Structures are given as structure tokens and as C-alpha cells.
Amino acid sequence: MKFVDEALIRVEGGDGGNGCVSFRREKYIPKGGPNGGDGGDGGSVFLLADSNLNTLVDLRYQRIHRAERGQNGMGRDMTGRGGADHIIRVPVGTRVYEDTSRELVGELIENGQKLLVAQGGYHGIGNARFKSSINRAPRQFTSGKPGERRDLYLELVVLADVGLLGFPNAGKSSLIHAVSSARPKVADYPFTTLYPNLGVVRLSRDHSFVIADIPGIIEGAADGAGLGLQFLKHLSRTHLLLHLVDIAPLDEAEEPITLIRTIEAEIAAFGNDLVEKERWLVLNKIDRLDPQDALRRRDDLVQSLQWSGPIYTISALTGEGTSKLMHDLMTRLNWLRKLDREVEPASQDGSGVQSPVQNDTWHPLD
Image 1 (spheres, rainbow, N blue to C red):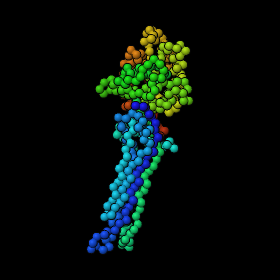
Image 2: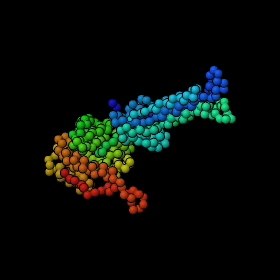
Image 3: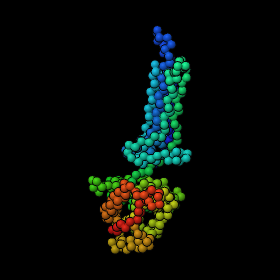
Image 4: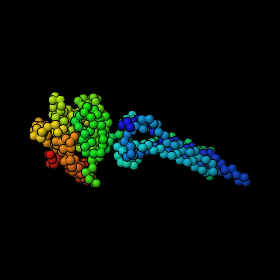
């Protein structure tokens, strides 16, 4: 199935049913009085998060979504039936915006979560409701209110704990293939990944996390080059980023430090606070080097970059170093999740919120 992470739709709540003008007509009962019933409320349109979906492709083919109109009121004081709600199923992680203003309407981040996007119209009132001591034969009624109509822009942002960054052929797909049951396309040419892939890394029954692989980023991505810009948004909800670098590129002109600086510049230009996210450096393809050469290149990179964060050397092809990397990621994610659950103490400046410490002293080396 084609991966689609954007869609434009129109949602229309059902109109309310009209009130009824009716009078009681029975033999031997003169002047029976008004008995026109109210109309029914129009149905509303809801979005429902469904974990079984992973793309918005269905909404590309069905753009208009209408809820049912409320039934008109009837005689004998019968109220019209309310219109049925219309449910639109979307993947977990969908953000909803007003199409014109791009104002955020809401987001669905849990399976089964519902979001009202178009309210149904209120019902009209029948003439029986206008009866009074001085108006015994009312002919007044009200029409049902029209339902809400909106044009919406839907954006899918995949939910993952860890995101993979890197140039094409850095080994991102190979890594997610090696540590999870995901089976993305792996080949010896650039841009084998054309859409995000998610893999579940399961270390034990109670310890697992989700890792996301996006298409490789190239120089100029922030200005629209390549596919990386389109999918960088999928890293916005991750806790941390793994920056994969080919430590032994076949093209000697592709120096690892140059590739690292280029990626850093692109995510800084992209914005969305990606550059502020915790980032680990992962040097891949050490199977092409002898162990001493790999360690020397790692130390040179640390010195040249003045890198103070976690750095690992792995081989996604052979699996060397991946087990330690995944276990350290699990440890770090458990700490970050605990931090998210804790109530943050009030800050001393009176703002009521104190930001968690971004940098700690835990910087493992393999």
C-alpha cells in the first residue's frame, strides 16, 4: 500500500431536522390543539484513531465526509430521529489542522481516541412548543440549524521513541532490519527507503521501544532536495535521535565529519526543535575495517567534533555492537519516560514549570 502522510478533506455535520406544524384531528374531539413535534439533531463527524491503520491513503480518494441529517418532526407530538454520526478512521499520530489558517484542531495519539471535527446542527422546534394560554393554535415553528462545515488538513506523524538520521546508504534500513522484525528494502544503492519504516525493538517481554527509519537526507534537504525534508517531521515526536554515519565510505571524498556537519546544518534549517533533541552518534560499517583502525577513526571524530555525547561503533550487517546499543537505548528511554510521567516542580521564577535537565553525565562508550 502506498504510504500517504497528508490529506485534505471536507467534513460536514448533518443539518438539524425542521419542527412540524400539526394539529390533532380526531372524531368527536373538536379543537384538538397543536401536536407538531420537534426535529432531530443532525449527526456529527468524528475522527477515530485506529492502530490498524498506518497511512492516510484512503482519504485521498474520499474527500467529502457528511453526517446524516436529522429527521423532521411529525404530528402526534413525534420527535424526528437524530442523524447518525459519521466516523472517519485515521492512523494513530494524526494531527488535524484548519486548511486555510493551519490552526491546530487537535491530534490523535492513542488508539481509540475520538476527536469532534464537525458539530451537527441543532433541531428545529414544532408548533406544540409554542402553545400558551393566549396562543392556543400556534402555527410557528423553527427550522433545523445547518451542520458545521470545515475544510481540514490531516498530517500523519508516526509515533516512535527513536528516530534514525543519516545520508543515503548510511545503513539505517540495515540497522532496523537487524534489531527488529521490520523488513525494509535493503540494497547497495542510495534512496532504497522511500517512506518511513517502523520497527519494534523487543529486548524482553516488558522492555521494548519503537524505532523509525526515514529516507536519507542529502545536502539541501531543508530547501526541498531529496526526500528527507518531507519526512523529517516524523522525528518530531521521538525522544532521541540516532545519527548513523558510514565510518568507511567507499568514496574517499565523503569524509564522515563532513557528512555529520551537513546533517546538523539541515536539521537546524528544518526547525521544529529537531536540533535540540538528544542525539547519539553511531558509526556504522566497522566490518570494513580492522578493530584498531575503527577505534582510531572514532577517536579522531570525537576530537574533531568535540563530541561529548554518546558514540557507538557498530556493524548493522554483522550485528556487532548493536546489542549494546539497543540495551543502552532502552535504559535511556526508561529514564526519559519516567521523567515524562513525573510532575515537574514549580520553577523559581514563578512560571510554574521547570524544564527537565537536558544534559546529564551518562555518556556510555562502547
